[in-house]
Image (cartoon, rainbow, N blue to C red; front, side, top):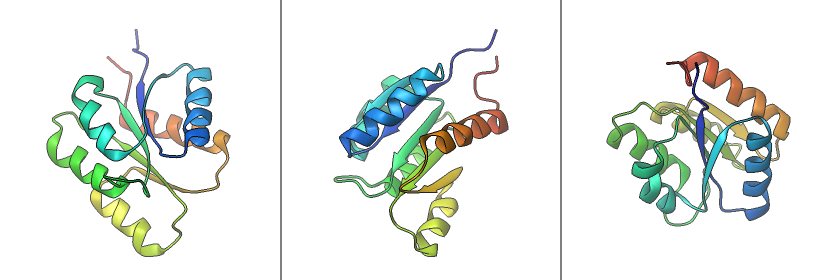
Length: 129
């Protein structure tokens, strides 16, 4: 039997964080949240998510720094979907160079995010025993 994927959502905009969390829970995912990258790094060892969805522009530790931390300091390979208002090609390239699985520009459709989450889960085999 497949386990329910656990997703960590990292977003400093409270309404967007609540919206993403609501949609993911509605889809049947287990969801943990953090208001910034520092909080995400602090809870990462306890939460050990299967997937991270993170904003890039956040206080303390930004999303790119979070991706770098996840790739360097976690034993488990955790895919990351990055969200940003930054549309410059250099940000997209940097995100992928650091190991992000997906990159979405704000504003975005919550339905599109769900589709991308499902694609990452299928592609990486998350939730399979």
